[in-house]
Image 1 (cartoon, one colour):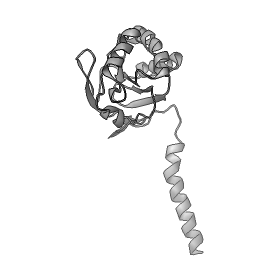
Image 2 (spheres, rainbow, N blue to C red; image 1 turned 30 degrees about the vertical axis):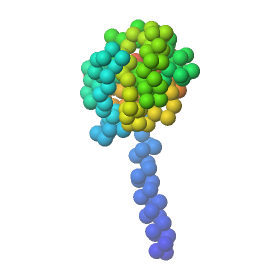
Image 3 (cartoon, helix red, strand yellow; image 1 turned 90 degrees about the vertical axis):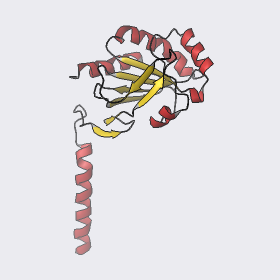
Image 4 (cartoon, rainbow, N blue to C red; image 1 turned 60 degrees about the horizontal axis):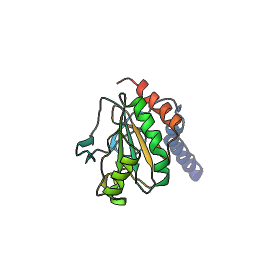
Amino acid sequence: MKRLLLAMFVALSVGLVVWPQTGQSPTVMAEPKAEQKPVEGYEAPHFTLTGMDKQTYQLNGKRSKPLILNFWASWCGPCRMEAPELRKFYQKFGQQVDLYAINVTSDDSADSAKTFVQTYELPFPVPMDMTGEVANRYRIQAFPTTYLIDRQGIVRKTIIGMIDASVLEQEVRKLLAEKP
C-alpha cells in the first residue's frame, strides 16, 4: 500500500511539473527568462563584435528594433544560396529591423568573407567573429543559423539551415507586431 501511495505521489508530482510546460497554447508568449541562452524565450547572449566596416556591433538587451542574427561562412553552399534572399529581405525591411550577418571567421578567413560580401553585394552589417566566441555562445552547429530577437532582447525563433524568404518575412512581421 505504501508503494502504491508513493508511486501515485511521484506520478502526480511529475504531472504537475510537465503539465504547465506542455499545456500552454502555442500562441501565448512565455514570460521571458532573464538568463542568457540561445534558446527561444530566453534573453539572447550578449556580445560586441567589430564589423567588416570597422564599426562596433553589439547585442546587450533591449533594442529599438528587432534583430536578425545570421551566422555564416563563405565556404557554405547554403549560405551562398541564401545571400541574395537576405539582401532582398534587407532592402524591404532594413528600416524596421536590424540584420547582422555574423561571419564566423574562426571557421573561415577574413579575405574569403570580404570576397563573399562583395560578390553578393550585402548591404547590411557583417560583424566578424574572429575567435568563434560568439558562435560558441550561440551554440552554432551548422551554417547558416539564424536567430530572430525581439525588441526586449529575447530569442523568439531559431532557424537552422537556409532561410526560406517567405518564412523569414512572416516571422519578422510577428516581431514587428509586438508592442515595444
